Amino acid sequence: MTRWKKFLLLLSVIGPGLITANIDNDAGGIATYSMAGASYGYSLLWSLIPITIALIVVQEMSARMGVVTGKGLADLIRENYGVKITFWFMVFLFVTDLGNTAAEFAGLAESVKILGINKYVAVPLGALFIWLLVIKGSYRTFEKIFLVVCGVYLVYIPSAIMARPNWPDVLISTIKPTFHFDSGYIATFIGVIGTTIAPWMQFYLQSAIVEKGIKKEHYWASRVDVIFGCFMTDIIALFIIVACGATLFKAGIKVDSAEAAATALAPLAGKYASLLFSIGLANASLFSASILPIATAYYICEGMGWEAGVNKTFQEAPQFMWLYTCLIAVGAVIVLIPNAPLLAIMWISQVINGIMLPFVLIFILLLINKEELMGQYTNGKTFNRIAWTTTVVMVVLTGMFVVSLII
Image (cartoon, rainbow, N blue to C red; front, side):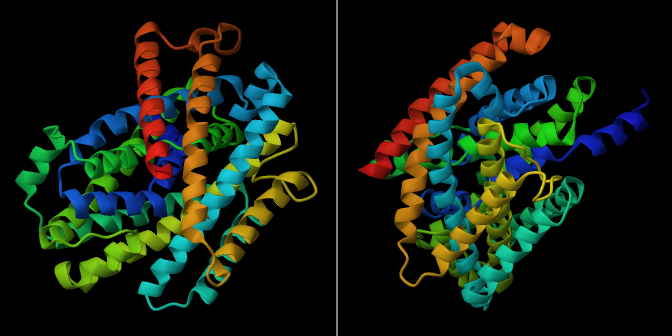
């Protein structure tokens, strides 16, 4: 195969990995990175290197299983470990993702407020737009639109540049690990790691690869897609931390949300930096509010043995379409209720996310090492060591993250 043909093939395969990784920078993720930069400057930048490695390891295994088996993760769990375990898995994940979807619409509501748009206009219109995109569109159309949306995340780069950081300090902080043993720093460190890998991401990635129909012989292109997506999402995270570190930290301003960071940037880095930050938050919130319900509908339908897919119609996959519709509708309505306990909803969803993650990672490792399932595509010894070490570290840190949320 010529280089030109390989390049065209790569372009045709790219999508699931890039989209899944970028959703990681949702409203909650942007808030976490903003608070990290505002509270501790550049001192947490070094953590993005091991975070990127952990993300690549986990996403690569999910992608490989999708390509080799042609089945989603929930489907494989049901077939190998039974309906009962799968059912309870789906129940807990559904509750989590409903809270996460409401949190994304909350992020949209706050970001458009900064842009001068009323949430009672923006949230219903946003919900209607993403609903129509899936219900009336095809997977190919849906993917193309969201690949363009991924590019909007790049607005955080000029936002950080406008903050005029000391770039040598940024470089040194990125490659030189430092650690502070105060409780606030440790909690923030755990939070940055805890936003990296969510259970639903693995289900969505594998299901998207299956629906796209990527073959074994093209797996190399899918791997490039995954790795590029992981690098892109954490590079964006780096620029968010830099933007807040160069301005808010320097001025001694601490924030408790992404929208607060966007507002605070205006007098320090200029209104355009603040505007770009707000646009990035609105984009991330709407983007994630669409993908999260799709991921949930995918894995519940796969787990229960129902038809699923963006390419399906209401008649072909009624459970999938109704689940998607209900999640968007309920998530949007929650945000529009006056005095709705949004912080409590976000808190509960993050706790359940943390509790479920270890189980998802362990299932992935058990499944990918089954020779009867994966054949020659099981993990090698070296990769297994890296994968199990990554899993154990993520389990421990996520456990600490959950405890910090509860305490």
